[in-house]
View 1 (cartoon, rainbow, N blue to C red):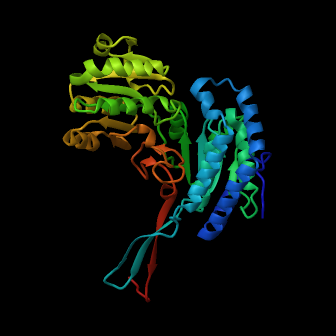
View 2 (cartoon, one colour):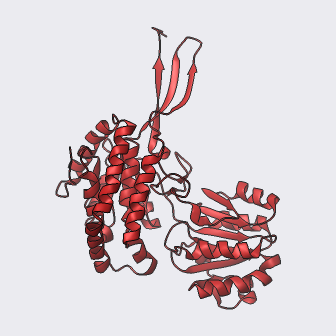
View 3 (tube, rainbow, N blue to C red):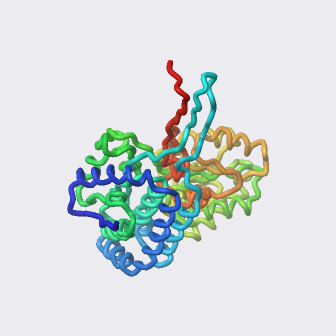
Amino acid sequence: MATTVALGSTTREKLERARAASARLAQFSTEEKNSLLLKMADAIEENDAKILAANAEDVERSNLQGAMRDRLLLTPARIKDVARAVREVEALPDPIGDVLEEWTRPNGLQIRKVRVPLGVVGIVYESRPNVTVDAAVLAFKTGNAVVLRGGKEASKSNAVLAEILASVPGVPAGAIELLDSSTRDTVQELITARGLVDVIVPRGGPALISHVVENALVPAIETGAGNCHVFVDESADLEMAARITINAKTQRPSVCNAAEKLIVHRAIAQKFLPDITKRLAAAGVELRGDEESQKIASGITSASEQDWGEEYLRLCMGIHVVGGVDEAIEHINRYSTKHSETIVTASEENAKKFLQLVDSAAVYWNASTRFTDGSEFGFGAEMGISTQKLHCRGPFALRELTSSKYQITGTGQVR
């Protein structure tokens, strides 16, 4: 039976509907879920004009500028990408019911550990309307109900998208709930709803994530900010290093896997820095650096201590010169947000050391940090990039939206 997003309902009523829906969703077969996901993708494309109109209202009334405005903006091409991501999720294997382990005890008990849904997943996020769809379809594929609390800047876009998804015939009432974003009270109600919500996912800036983690009574899976690094080692192919640096910084600077810092080995700094800084400046990148980098290349202003730990989310990059891979690793582990880092090098020894010792969720050798993404990893979409170490780390997708339980079969055993 089709349903609609009941915006007039109280938060409590929406959470109770989601809890009831989670029990129904847990019974859906893979075929039933996949069929509805394909209908959701079709519905998004069929309603593109409605989505664009709502998004235009959001963009017009927002005070966002530059990269943050770009996060909010939807275009016909981006809507097609959103629908494509839904179809990619549909095509992925359903993890629910997977047998993780299976064994028989000496007493004859047969024990199986299987994947099951988490139940009700709440997500608090900022001005990226595509997250509304990503979160809803990932939760649906894994038999979870989802409660969405987006940012007020995208309220109209989120309302239309949630309405379209929830109105697909066959989607249970309460499976996709959207909370009022005009008041902060709904965030607090969601993150303290023990017994109704099983897990909270905060996705956004450091202030939002900190508030949720510090105030939630519901278990939270933290998705982190991205102060990501590119380290150009002394044996690097410098043209490769330039391509990777330019891509990681400029391809989409407003996202968490964009590189914010460039670390360069002293042995090649005199040759590499003048060229890469010219290329970055030509792409509109503001450059901040340490004293050594400023002496080597022009156009670099002085970086403060605060710069090294800052996630810029715009066309700005910090530059630091080091004496070797050990110093680069020490700097990254000190200032990184534990998201994504890459080394450009021809030295397998240095690459292996970097891959092993850099303490981040995704560590690359000769590739851009921009690949830390659910779709690029083959997961279809993501709830975010987890930078914590419990439950999941890295792109937070289908398997991470599951828990497990033990199923034990006996023949009358007693203890």
